[in-house]
Image 1 (spheres, helix red, strand yellow):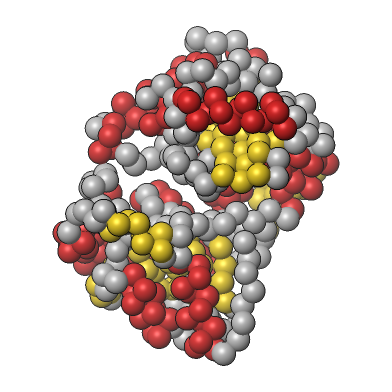
Image 2 (spheres, rainbow, N blue to C red):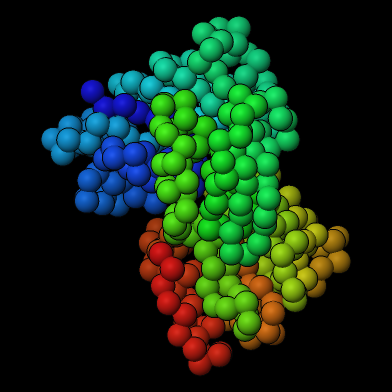
Length: 396
């Protein structure tokens, strides 16, 4: 039977899942992956239907893993997937919690409902769980689980509390990497490094490493699995620090956008220009929040379309603008996403950073009833190449 590692939370599921998969495979164990970017089984890649697919497709995927001799799988577990019973036929051996912040309230209505759905995953896991001790909802989840399940199977990871079961001490943060010490039960096991900047990615690496250790994986495999990891559309760098650096990221929630912009704000040498929008017919409460966050951290903002679906793009932009305007950050509205990115490139000088947020790895845009080809990474790369007459290689 396939050993399953389920990862849930608002942000960081995809990156953590990719990290954990690499670690497990470095240990010599073929590993399947089910998540937002793709479904992987051996050398086969399937285009995802949902982050967490439906019960029938999940059964098919696990049957395929059995045929291919893939005896373990890392999967992202969405709140929709839990609430709609998509994982009811799957045994979850290990579960991991990244964080919880506002998202999907168009579906769940309240944060309490959202939390209670996420909690269900941890009541089902059979071998162990690792929880973010630095997140307020993580603290609550840990306390509540210890009253209902075997205490020894519930572990905490932290970048703040040295008493946590797994503790990380950051040694270096730059645009090229993050390096940190990894402690288990107070004992230093060694240093780990990820080639993605930002404290939030260190949190992802801590969860992946902690889940691997709970499953008995040797520390040397943690280091090898994390070292060369690149996750498409997650803090993906395009261009050059010596010219204009482009960064494409999937950040589409207030918390995700704030972590992204705060990280780059600390590392920038010039200005930071932010191109972003919000999805249509989704949690409308986060639009003003994201406008306020973008305006606080950025030197210039361009509000544009994300996936407007069937909602009037002007309405979405207006809601974002209500949060952005009071910050005093200069901005403009360019609803055509290509033209918005082009505008940012034309305004950027050397040493500046252009952040294109919200879609990350996606190669399409949902507008009305159409699914139109569009790739932030390809668009930004081509425009920067044209501006500087240089070729920037693919980093996927």
